[in-house]
Length: 170
Length: 124
Image (cartoon, rainbow over all chains, first blue to last red):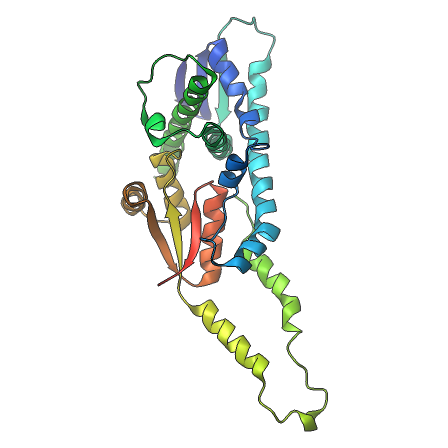
């Protein structure tokens, strides 16, 4: 896999079928349904529990807005990922282009996905920072790899965004 | 990010509550002090208390992502944003901003939009 910054966006090329599939799983991975810890993490309370009134108002007015915001980001990513659903041969490497204007949506969706997966598997701090983990041997290992892979993409997008913000300031 | 501020909606919602304050129908009987106004004053004082925007540690969020969010939401320069990010990372929490409740609510809402763990707390 190669990832580089172009003038109008980010290009991820030479994506093998495995990594392409992991990317295709981003939208589905953002769904916290059925995992209470994930739902709790994405929609965490706005206070430390003492301010009941604020929490009630938050549930009523803010949470629906947050749900809409997260859904919009996920939809944008899903649309970009349609590039990977072409008629190319199953084992051929593929290329994905992320327009600069979609960078925020990608950062948001990747963050949602990482948080939901991490909550689902209750990864420990140690596991999350162990980048030299042994090869994938279980669904849990695969999910940890997924969290780290999404983190790597997120990191690259951040650099690209930072670069484009700096150049627009100049 | 186009999340409408919480305080605007709350203000609209609270609009109805304003009409609950007593309207004295008979002026002759309205010689007593108005306790409701007192309680309103208290509530205003309460609103004026400084509130803190606190961000809590989360091992999943990338340090660079958290720094970017602090820069965007609070307009902090990179160095200050990084300082707060490191405080969150090492101490488990950092107070990012202190001030009026409405503004603090807006900040917390924005931080949740970036999926950070943020809370609104009354300043000690």
